Image (cartoon, rainbow, N blue to C red; front, side, top):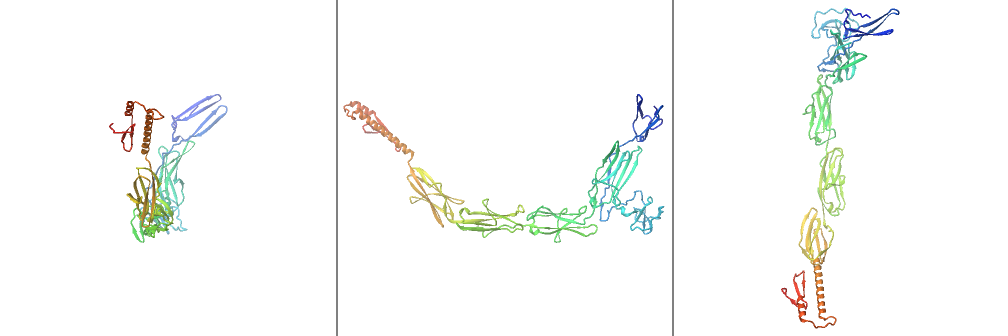
Length: 588
């Protein structure tokens, strides 16, 4: 086996492995430390003494992934008008610094950097200039170009450049706008690419994107994508994304209420905002009825608005090209709810049994809802409060509350006082029939109401009884202390200028437990005495015919030794009685 590598680029980098086998063999050729120049055809030539010669060929491909792409945007604001961007550059190769303009059959040489002609004029291109038909717009010629460039192609501006270095084979660059690929479109998109080869043989590609800018391009994201070959397929790298700044004047402004985001009511703080359709936002002034209003950063704030602030508001700016006034307007309406008013009176005095019709009204720009409250409890709905056959319980303070369901927090209220006049009424006690022990004391109460406030007196057995009283929220409370000695009746009498009324208490006197106990003790003592007497008579024989002869000495002794002690709970006196009934003093 022979390898031809003498004085070649592969010298020292070729290695061959042979695997012999019976009747055949396999030869493996390896190239060490591959280089870009190794991308050549390799030929394997086989010679046979019997079968002749044969050969095979293969091509070695070498790949190198490029560096990550670098994108640079033009740091320039692009002012756009209705025709073309103000800062548009001429869409011709950068190396051309002299332009020949053909206008009306005359040739004049101009420099893009000078406004005056340069003399003498250069020679014309070798090809004859077009003479017919005559173009309607200027025609641009370059010494390096054989065809004219019309000015309509020169409305694009450079957006940015993208560079991918050190790739092999040559990588390709594709531009994207908001994820949409861009390609050359006459009069709209221009993509120019330049390729450079370094000493290493690697390719560097630079691409420039120029675009005919429109208003909608403001804020658009541009980026480039690098596609390169790898073994068995393709690879891809993306650059960072850049935004362009398109500037154009506002030919329209819009004014609206920024807050609140609902119907406006009196007392609100209202913010107006005015924005134009240009970029950047124009400076605006606010006015109402031709009177200028103070605003900050295109925002007008009105605090604590009232219905008087309703009307037409304007924001005004000046077009920077035409110097015409650009106006936007909106109409503000402030909803209102006037304070509630009750009629006929804020304080009403009615007699018991009379009827009441009280109205509550509040003028509003929106539909209202009215409820009547008393002591925090709803008693009626609607703007008319109707009460029939009024009684004392209906007296008090009523509140009329008017709300606007459409606007939370939009409400007002008014109150009126209802006074009910009439004869006194006594609150019935739990019981007017009482049982009390003799010598005990009972407290009787009497509660009365009426208008005018009633006076309460107490009587027992036709006589006045001393009492005490307090004025309460709804009337008078009076009470007396009565000592029970026997059955008696006590009356509570309430009166005012409209009438009087009374309540009668019946008290039944009952014996005390102490008296009953004393009676029982006395009865027991009497029984004991009776038993003693009977026993004595039995001993004397005066019962059942017994003899009266007895030992007088013993009798006297027995008589002297038997005594009975009696105690009374009432007098707490002790009485000693001899069996013969003689009384003795306490010290005997």
